[in-house]
Each structure stands twice: as structure tokens, then as C-alpha cells.
Image (cartoon, rainbow, N blue to C red):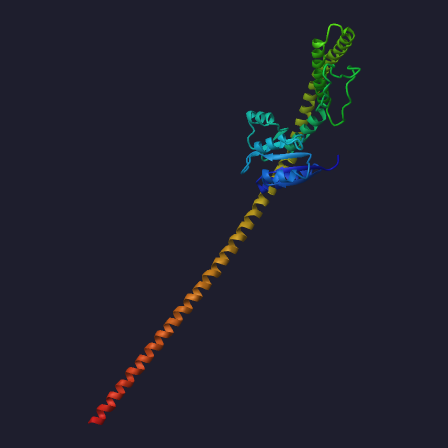
Amino acid sequence: MGERIALVVDDSKSARFALRKYLEGHAFRVDTADSARAAYAWLQDQRPDLIFLDHVMPGEDGFAALQHIKDDPQTAGIPVVICSSNEGGAFVAEARSRGAAEVLQKPPSPDQLQRVLKQIETLSAAAPAPVPSAPAGQPHPVPVDASVAPARTAAATPAAADAGELRELRESLDLLRADLATASTDSAQITQALEARAGAIEARLNAIEQRLGSDLANVHKHLEREIESLRRHGDQAVEALRSQYEAALEALREEQRQAMDALHQQRAQDHDARRQQFDVELRAVHEQFREELTQAMQSAREQALQDVRARLLAALGE
């Protein structure tokens, strides 16, 4: 699989850093945005394969951003994953009802992220193609041989492929039944052909439903094997989780260092300003003291001269 593009929208620098590292390990090229507004600006020129939206953000939150993305025809088809520490079933149901493809718990683990990516790939592979609308008065087009299932990509699981085909066949069957109900009485040939196709679709539906039951049992066994494998590799999961927290901690430390550097710089500027003010005040006091000393010395000199003059006059008088 080639490189895909993911957009991570989160106001937390450490959360963006951690999720970006995980996604890069899954062959994603990751761009980030720290707000919904920044994400909208980014989406004007680029189209990612996947968007991760933080649920709680200043300004527009994740649900508001999700609504904005789904309302835009240019971005409505992009899968969106809501990232939240709320893991309740009601929240997950609400997120999906609003258009989210999946919900990723914060902080995410490698296993959770891998599960979400696989689920999105499965949903994308199983999504049915849109049914073209038929002209007015004509029956909806259906395959000539409705018993032949459309081909599926290798990326989809058998159960997911059957589920997608099942939805397509049910839609076709509903359309055929609607056409049968509205067909005129003199269109016996068309009605007979539609009934034959409907019968073939119903037979195919029954076969798929039976196979789905078997596939579900196989999926259950496969999940049990995967769970057992995860238990055996628990140390790797713990190490990955520790790496995640270390990365987040390092990001927080970097933020703290930057904040401390800014604080020290501000304190140094304040100290320089106070020192300059003190120098100005000290010079003013020094000038004032010198003026007062000069005046005092001049007054003392004049007083001494007057005393000497008085003494001389007194001596001459004698």
C-alpha cells in the first residue's frame, strides 16, 4: 500500500505529536492543525485520505467541525475519526450518527489505532456503489444476472464483502418490488422478467445469509486467535504504550523548557529596565547632593570670611 495522507486536528501539541508518530508507522504522511479553522483552511487546497478530529477544542469542537466537513460536498466523502477520552456507548453512537466513521479513545494505543484503521478500510471496501436513478416511468436498472455477486477487493474480509453485496441486493430487490407494484396491467412481459429477477435475488439473499452465519463464526474464531496472540505479545504492547507516554512527556518537557526560557528572558528584560531606572534615580540624587554640598561649602566660606572681617575690624578698632 502506498503512502496515504492523514490530517490530525488537535489543540494539544503532545497529542498531535504522538498520533503523528503512530500514523507514520502505518505509511501515512501526516499534516496537523491546532484548530477547526486551521483545518478548514488546509482542506481548501488538499484532500486527505483520513481525518482525525479531537472532540474537545477551543472555538469549534469536534462535532461542529465534523458537521462542517460533512456539509461540504468536496470533503463529505472523507472518513473522519473522532478522538475523545469519552468511551461510553452513547457517545460512540452519537458520533457515528453525526457522520463519524470511527471513535478513537484518547490517549490511543497502537492496537486501538490499528483496529480503527482496519475498520475504516473494511467499511471503505464494503461501501456499495451509488445506484443510478432511472428515467421516470421506467423500472430501475438491475444486473442481467442477479445471481452473480460483484467482485470484491482483496482488502475486504469475506463477511464484509457479503454484507456489502447483501445491502446492494436488498436495495435492488426493493426497487424491483416497487416497479412491480407500479407496473401497468398490460406490461405482462416486463412484470414476468422483473419477477424472475426478484426470485433470483431472493435466492441469492438466502445463500448470502447462510454464508454470513458461517463467516461470523469464522470471524469469531479469528478474533479469539488474535486476542490470544495479543496476550502473548503483551510485552510489546506495554513497551509501545511506554514509548507513547515518553514521547508525550518529552513534548511536554519541551513546552516547559520553552516557557521557562521565555520567562527567564522576560525577567532579564525587567531586571535591565529596573537597573536603568535605578541608575537614573541614583544620578539625580548624586547631582542634588553635590548641589547642596556646593551651596553649603559656599555659605560656610562666606560665613568664615565675615567672621575674619569682623575680627580684623575689631582689632583695628582697638
